[in-house]
Length: 399
Ligand code: OVV
Image 1 (cartoon, protein in one colour):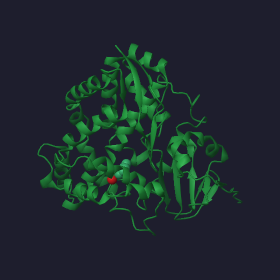
Image 2 (spheres, helix red, strand yellow):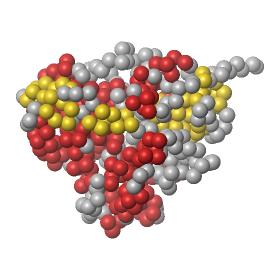
Image 3 (cartoon, protein in one colour):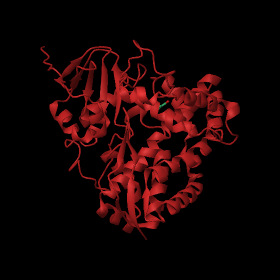
């Protein structure tokens, strides 16, 4: 039998250069249409930008593993930026064990119990932000809300919480190449790293918080103390910058779509859908990598063992093979199958927390704001993984 395989489409474009990171959506169609499998000679990695191949790679964790790193660095050949995560950067069977511990921590009834308190915080922040008719939806709301509720939920020490955002930013930058974006975020990062390591220790976590729950459930499952500390670190790494930008990007989408704002104001059941559509349309986590554990054929292309492959989640979320009018922000659309939270066994552990946060913030805004528009073009915060805003100046009409 003859098997014909084709070559991957070679891409000269650098998906981690500042121009690409500032406006990835301008380049996604080029990448999707170049072929089912891409080759980035600059980095020596393969890539997938179409929904079908992204889903296939993320589903087949035996072939496309996470334990060699989910960034550009191959842990089999390079020293990881930090001690690998026991969730993100592990494969089964170990991943199953740590994930099941964490699933207990983030269980829905425990999360629902926090919703009422979060609503008061959101109402208070929205009130303070909008009352002058102009505000910055990133620095005065999208950043403040998660930073008000998340550290308390985990039970973090009261002092030094400002290290959280700098730390998370460095973790997400570290998934990319050692470029200027990465180097710049490392300036002074040691203090944040030390604070995070300390904050993960049982004795430094407040009784009643989710951090101690991680330790308690972890110990019950037979994990050692340093392992439990690393699982707390996962919460701190993945729980801040992601939700901040999920909320910020969602508000940014509404600021450019007055008809969507009117729709959600007249039908609150659209709040949930709006966040999912915002994640599909302008997702927070743009890319993650996998590494092949064997030679494999993907999209008609032969990949060798030990190959790095970047999954362009945000490009897949606008693949016209999967979505009608993919470039349109339509909050009534069917969004199931979007890969804004990833897909498969590593799909976002905190997705229900993220949804609860975003929905509560959006609800609070809808309560108070009749109309919103951009007061000035927003500024981007360039990151190797995250699609992020530094600010989002809005003008609002109060309800
Ligand atoms: C999804 C994600 C991002 C960053 C860090 C981690 C997870 C972690 O497990 O540490």
